[in-house]
Image (cartoon, rainbow, N blue to C red; front, side, top):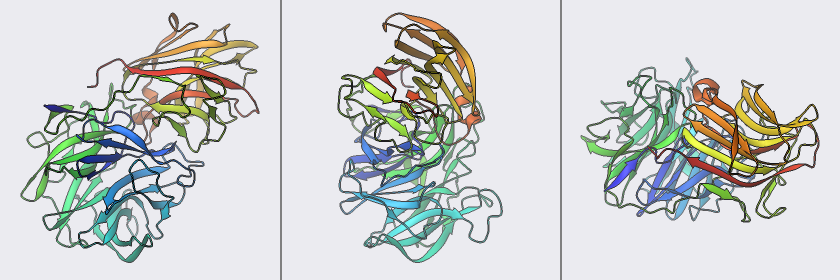
Length: 518
């Protein structure tokens, strides 16, 4: 029997939304200040997923200029209707709420249809069986926000021909609690004659929860489920290793089984560095209401699953740079400049052109990263780089934000070439250790063991020397650094504000988990 092994998407994959088309499932998640925006995945068993592309791949779709790490793209919703895929989301930094469409889920996707009057965040789409379409969203209390999180969920008809809101907007629910905070991520479904509104509330931290209400009319009045919240981990205490459970989306299989995808965070020593991830749970219906993981009531790391296993080709842990394009799992901070990198200037290498911008800037630095997926892993690379002055540096980094990251970099200091470990904590650089080096070709290795990081270096990729043992990475956690993102790990180069024509060549990059998934 196939197994659900949670999370089904490890690492920084928050705010999942899912839709079914026949026997195929498609899933998207938030990306905030990273480009390209909104990865899209395909599966046939809800457990094994393959990324088939990214939705927002052009600057005309996604402007991230000046976006903070936890700004940019919030909470996309993916839906399918009459041969067309629709994705609706919020660019909280530029423009607000918009829709893009595609005939195929892998794209290409259209340029945005911006929705005038669509106030707030976390938009969703609902297609009724009478042919009408509706916008469902979250907005501040129109009568005035009385407390932090005093928002409401609302619905309004959407004209698909003009991609514009029509008619009146209707407040439909504020959440299950009397003074509920942040009633977010609303998704609307029609099941057995009822309109069901499922939302997240309580904020996306430890009090996060999924609640649900229903009505015979799309505009209400909505009655809450007497057993709300239908899933949360808020009652399990700080020591429980899965927290922040919420922001769910329901999906029905072709043989009438129900499931829910949702976000949650795995912690290590009480801290979360991998961000909010995508989890899966079974759902049954009793007395007209959904029951999540019946008899258990919380998320499990593993449980039985009835759908036949969908085989996905395993990914290599080592990335080699022989193709014309980077794998679609790689990400950039904000909109990448045209000359950021090259795969052709030196055969078999990723050439990263140093930029004046650094990781500490709210700009597009020369940084190419992937998501941190586990707490036990090895990252390594071979880099060829010669710094011309003390402003130039290149290497690998673990990035939570511009203010919280760890850089393992080659640079100059007092006329000598050195390899140094820098922790950026609340925007301030702290030198952890350094060593003088005499080679322009370096092999760098980071070994993570929970919240401790060992850093090694070498010349030939087979023998390494230890530079620093047990660097603490708790400052890269949500609990300390804040925000909505998880860590990414990648290659970088900077001239720290000074013009340069220099570059760093990376021969390969490996990210390898050292513990089996769950």
